[in-house]
Amino acid sequence: MKTDTIFYSLFQAFPSIFFELINNSPTEADVYEFTSREVKQLAFRLDGLFLPTTKDPKKPFYIVEVQFQPDDNLYYRLFAELFLYLRQYKTPHPWQAVIIYPSRNIEREQNLQFGEILLLERVTRIYLDELGESSLGVGVVKLVIETEKAAPALARRLIAQANQQLTDTKIKRDLINLIETIIVYKLPKKSREEIEAMLGLSELKQTRVYQEALEEGKAEGKAEGKQEGEAEATRKFTLKLLRTGMNLQQISEVTELSLAQIQALQKEIQES
Image (cartoon, rainbow, N blue to C red; front, side):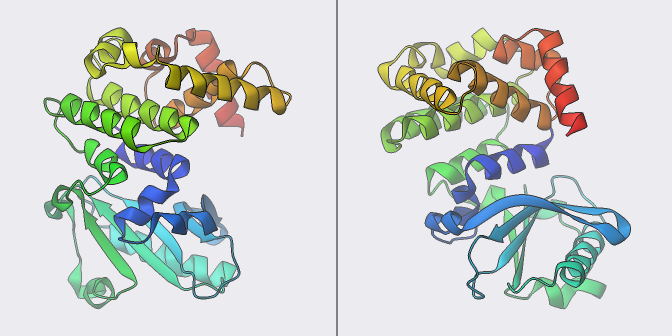
């Protein structure tokens, strides 16, 4: 399971969750853009960047690293990329580094070189197994590290929570799709129909609220001069799954697209 790309997809679709993780107001996401940026000198690419969309110099920019495997070189790479980025872009905003681990035993601190830096208020280290389920967003993040046995029950609770708390039908639909995607990753031997039944999505997708979300997607598609909204929503969802590294057969089961259609979208990503 490519956890880093799952997280980057999550932050791209729901940036407010990142700010919940660092104990900031979710509304902070309104003045940030989640993006990536290449550092040209050594062909580094910072895949996780929250850049302010305001000129307020008090707003920091965030460099985000998701690390689910032990890596002795992580901090060497992270801080090298950070300071090269500062040299190249000379941003007027202060930096903040956020590193997300499943648990403390994965971290390799390298205290000889980075001990003092890691103690700075500019550096936040998050250990997912130590988080409480204080919000819907944090619950979705914790779903990524949940065991295969326990994940379906947590997913059902999160879907119920989304139905109760979210009023925007499009956001609700997208979040439920993301929860389903995480479960597809965790249970690759299960078919799409089995997972929908397991999570109670077969019934949910027939409800008025879910159908309204689909209709909203259609309206957006027509307003933008695109093909029917539902087809465009499926295309965007498929692109998101491809970027997470899911294999083509699994994507076909989830989206009901043919392998040829998915391969065409894969080529579109590679050429972009």
